[in-house]
Image (cartoon, rainbow over all chains, first blue to last red; front, side, top):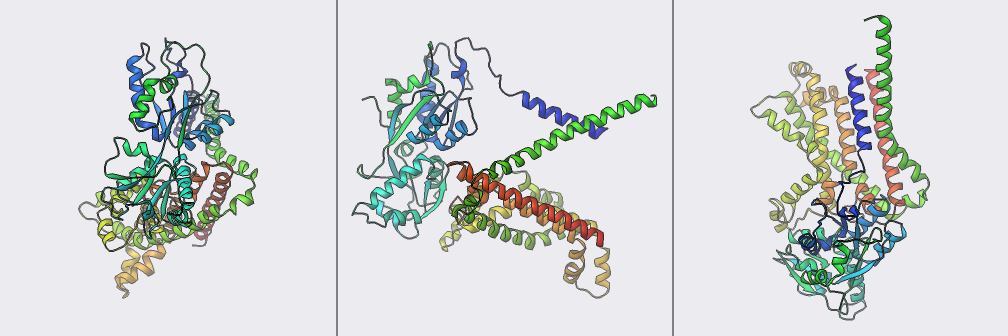
Length: 276
Length: 270
């Protein structure tokens, strides 16, 4: 009898949990509340997007729900959440490359038009103490250097590998450069922020990340080695709404990102603006 | 209460229990069934013979065997001591042993990094000696050992406790040494519990993900075990992770079932 009741309660719990999904509207008075859903954004966008959000909240007479926020992760992971998991509870998707955006659109998860809104470059970061004495890009290929990259499925990881290939074609580096550096890779991380964490902890000797990551507030405990423009890869950031909007009356996140004010904030955080 | 009313109530209870059981059973079984069914629609053979998958399977087999060896080697004496002795703080030690069961594995991974990482308590002196642990296959084994140990130690301790000390005392009076009594009497008597614990510990090590990715990172053939490979492959497509998951489901199920049948037979012959 007791067992039966316990089992029945569990079953009830499961059933009510299943019914509890969806229906989270809180009767927003300012029109389309789909904009209350979070923005899915590449992890490298965390700082400028948080700041843009603050700015928006201060401007908007009709601010979206407080808890509305962001889901920051590797662009490929967000694309999976959008396409494979069929997540529709997001407002816009901001990808660190065009490929993940295209895959999200092809997969039917994103219906809005994609807009190029920022560019980024790569840099090499080393821990403050720089135990492995990495001064030049060539030093990355030295024996025993421990490197972390973002996984090649992550835009930052794909760009990093493209930079290594570019360098291998350069006589100053030599043909074997990319392979030698890749041999030194001790871990492929699921997003670019984890590459930074490994370097800051000095668990590894070097990592390749976006220039903006090295400018962000969290860029303590590390030093930056620049990559020359001719070898560097330009990351393109694209943003698209889940659905095209019709006649919204209040400040829109995507519009704000593309606006002069939004571009200013992105530039402050080291991104290359696209509106000039 | 009349007997008719009683039997009606009873039928109601049975019905309710049956429905509840069916719901829970389906909840547990459907995801596994879905993986097997969807995996059957992939180019299963091509997927499981790709180098990333075979590397991951081989690495998982090697590392889980090693961690199980460590768990048994060091866990058995500890379980025995915990079963046979009482000392101040016994309950605290016992709780500490169990802690990895409830801690999120990521916490375990972070802790291992703080001890054995390059800036860690032991990692820094080791690094000076030229020994580096993080990001190696050794780190994978350590992460698995950390999360899997309690499962073995708990079971082994219960086994030693159930066996009681009397048989060992008899062996001692017959001239057996303390370690002889442990190896020839206590261990064989507690064997079913030791085996059960070992199987659970191995299964836990096989599924280990969080501590491994924190402490060992992810590199094909070196630290990318099956769970890490599933996570990694999921980012580029659904076919490879499905095939790999199906392999893991079949292997885990076979091991658990074989263990169950073997222990039943052992219990019958005793």
